[in-house]
Image 1 (cartoon, rainbow, N blue to C red):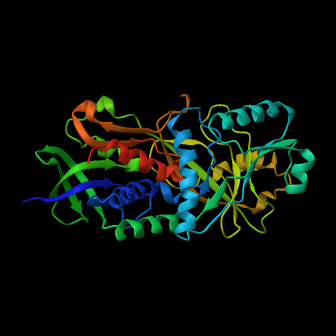
Image 2: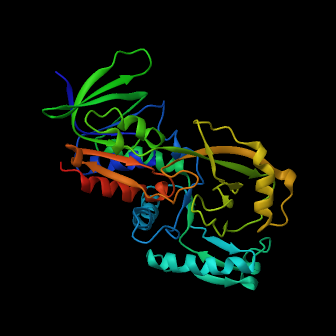
Image 3: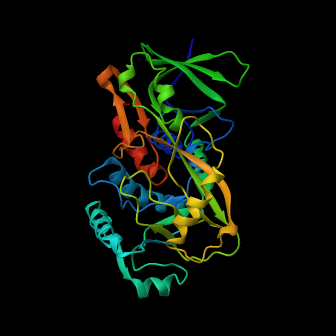
Length: 373
């Protein structure tokens, strides 16, 4: 007889952990499967570790709604579970007259999204706050912050397990088929073990970069229902030496919506890094493209003219699971319960890029609401 569990969540990044924790805290028997040797080794471990305010996303988009809600939940969680974080704020800077109109548009977009705490600064105020930054004007976002993503995920895991949940690492979901009790899953543990079977009432696919591949293993889900995945690498370069900033520094973002521009973030240890850029690639490669150093220096010097090129060194790279190609309009999160394909209580999450970390607890609320358990 197959082992049965009420809920199975696949993917132990920040989003999968948040969903599993929420389901376990609601009293559901929940199993969390992770293909890697440990939690948080995918998208969640290779990002800027920023708590986003919810400024840029289109009004009424899922990204905007869940980022704003998630930000509040995340700060509360960090305080409750002593997760290292810092509400440092960020400056969005205009470096020439042509960017002032974009600042006005960003301010209006933030207000439309419910982010009503932005403050407009003139050149003099920016200089007082950030003497090393070149800007003719800026918007200050006081609710933006930073956190330790690793400690956040450890806290999620701890609360999930304390709530009765079980996590299984090196566990790959190979197939999903219908079953009288819901769904029958074929799972492989490790590299040598024989696959085993279990049944579940509900399945949540929070596999990040692997979400499309996993969805293709669900019997009855048509290929056309699975959006195309675009690998989009973001390179990061670290600044050697002392930190010249007090806040996160963001340029006015590019108009194509592919990213937020090459910005300056500070980790909790005070290390400054610049990035990420937007580099569409064909394969899942995390090698930092050192050839982009000149591009970085040029972009950073627009707002930090004192940069010493020799102090900028390759650090790491992350890959965004984008749903849009390089010439496409920005895509929203896809969080979809699959009853339309006669697959009730299966939820697929596609394109969970930034602000997925910030939105993770709100995404968990959303997924819980989609399941009939």
